[in-house]
Amino acid sequence: MKNAIELKSVSKRFPGFEIKNMTFSLPSGCILGLIGKNGAGKSTTIHLIMNMLRKDQGCIKVLGKNNEEHFEQVKEDIGVVLDEPGFPEFITIDKVNKIMRNIYRNWEEDRYYELVKQLELPRGKKQFKDYSKGMKMKLAIAVALSHQAKLLILDEPTSGLDPVVRDQLLDIFYEFTRKEGHSILISSHIVGDLERLCDYIAYIDDGRLKIFEEKDQLLQQYGLLKCSIEELQELDECAIKGIRKYTYGVEALVDKRRIPQGYQTDIVTLEEILVFLAKGQKGVRI
Amino acid sequence: MKGLLFKGWLDLKYRFWMFFIVDIIFGVGSSMMLKNGNFLDLRWIGFYLGIFLSSIPLRNMLFDEKAKWNLYQLVLPVHKKDILCMQYFIGIGSLVLACIGYGIGFEAGSLIAGEIVWNDLNAIGLVIQQIFFLATILMVIEFPMIFFLGQKRGRKFIVILNGCVAGIFIVAVLNGYTLLPYDLPYRKWIMAGFLIIAWILSYKISFQLFHLGRD
Image 1 (cartoon, rainbow over the protein chains, first blue to last red):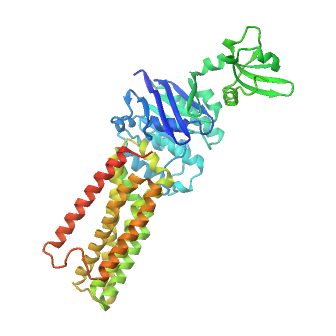
Image 2 (image 1 turned 30 degrees about the vertical axis):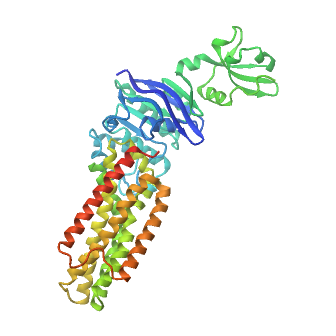
Image 3 (image 1 turned 135 degrees about the vertical axis):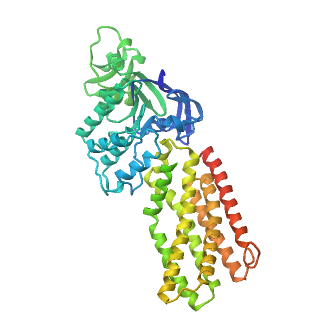
């Protein structure tokens, strides 16, 4: 199988918001990071992929199969963590095991309890309603990793977790992709996590895919240029992706391929790319 | 499917156990009423419990919505018809448990009063028929309307529906009307057949609406 996820010209309209012509693919065995502002459409994209929302146009394939036909069988191989873990308030660790072993064909009880222990989740009678936000997320992740999934779809999985546990989980996710054919689609605001983990980055803004690129390519392609406004205005407008103005000059995110040689640019982080892209080109021409 | 049914059973056990305690209490109260009055007065008990219990499936959907389980279950490898079956299982299951609870309460009340009267079974049977009939009418309409109107408007519709059905029932009873005459041959079988057909039709309509899907 070539691609774990394929979206072609996917559109979905809501009152006041629209996902328009979303097209990207997650190659099998890779990790794709979805980044964007709050309300950009990351969770909506995930819901469309999982057929939780009916798309208006386009085609979505997951693990080689159309996501509208017999998708229940494909879901056996997908582990999903939504941005808000959705377990009933009375659920305990053991009850989750009883429910999931009767839902997933390949449920691994030993692996589940091993993850429960590793993530320090409370056994016994403590109910889901008494869990902290981090514990709720850890339970959802333990379930997603306990049924021999080939694809993980994670919507803000490290949100609310302390740095130690985040680090632990990133290692688990990384190990997951070491197996052949295992892929991850992860959406997160913690860009540092994506920078560490991902092979591909998709930047979504206002329902549209603005950038889809290999992470390393992205970091090489863009640079941070510090100059005066006059110097900036001499550059091709298409080369400038975002500006931050200071009293004595500007800082601009530039596409290094489109600026003349001789301009010195600094190395840029993924977080800076996101911030500058969100700011856009406001104020380039005075 | 088994996993969802187990989850449904847990919903009934943890979210609605108080409803069944209420049924037992009503059962005890009914046996006291029967000692002093006409067993047709128990229709009002059946009426109240029927309306009371018909709200369980909707309340459960609201709990699930609050817990975000309604979204999470869509990522599990289960067919939409299994998700719907679980909702109907909760509806029918709650009625069965309620009737068992009512019967236990009624006989317990009789024992407290110092006697078990074989006519108790007629009385329990009358109330159970009332509960099943009224709750079924309400639930088989409520389920498809929730999927058709959505949760928010569906809830408003249910309040109006309950009010209308309650009003019709009160007017009918006060004027001495019954849906089917008590001396009608095979009355119980006719009612049972009606209930089964109503549940099946309701499920089929709900499935079409759920499958077509409101976002």
